[in-house]
Amino acid sequence: MNIEAIQSLIDDIRAREVELGYDGGCSDADVDRLETLLSVILPAEYRAFLIHFGAMWIDGKAVSGIMDGDPDAAELGSSYCDTERYRDDFDMPRHLVVVQPDEDAPYCIDTAAINGDSSPVVCFQLNTGTYQPITKSFSKFLTDWFLKPLLSTA
Image (tube, rainbow, N blue to C red; front, side):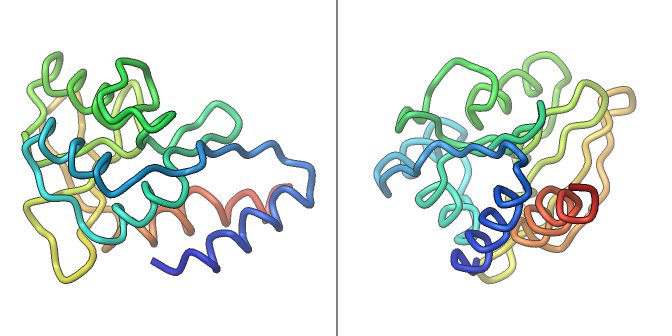
């Protein structure tokens, strides 16, 4: 993950007076704890996002992560809380980790398909219990699906 490029996009978005927040990051130990809680190994690029940004939100949308340095926070926007909620309520496969909650189809990292430093982001359909890839990596999801659309509309 190119943290400088992500930060540059964030700066451009904020320059357009769009409110964008992030939590400020966390430690490697916090990410290790999240992996233990969820029983997964996270791809390096999502780990980098967590360490540098923690979690992120814009206009009611969130990129789930580690909030306030607390990997097992029991609040929406926490990867742990969001993932456990969909696992418990919708029998979501245990290898999926929620990165953007949604009432119909959350976006998740597929930790069973890690390829190098990344893994695909999939859309999990709550009504059918199926999922399909939407991007090849979390970085692409963050930039192309979350950040760059704000530059074209702001």
